[in-house]
Length: 105
Image (tube, rainbow, N blue to C red; front, side):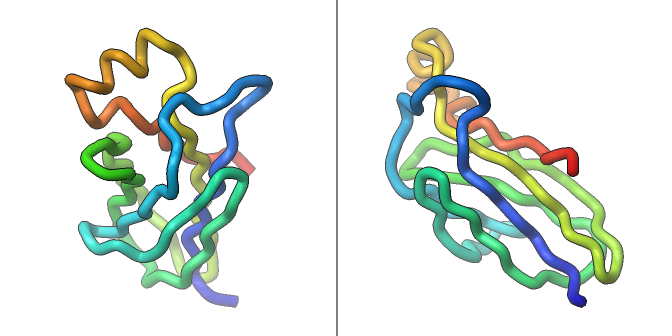
């Protein structure tokens, strides 16, 4: 078993994303893959402290710092803005366009 980063893209509850498209997932400032709606990205990573972020064009999530130990999986969920006020605000504050948070297993 290896150390893994898992990012799943799905909105909680009922709703739809206002910010759509393929998201690029970055780890420590380097793109590691892409994720489409209801997709999952799993990549092996080194144990330690990392920063993950999701982006689409000039829009992004806020960076999330996490620690992961050997043979653990760090899991995150993400989705585009779902409420009109947040969507409109993300036009000016671009790191509000995508919600990225650690998933509780």
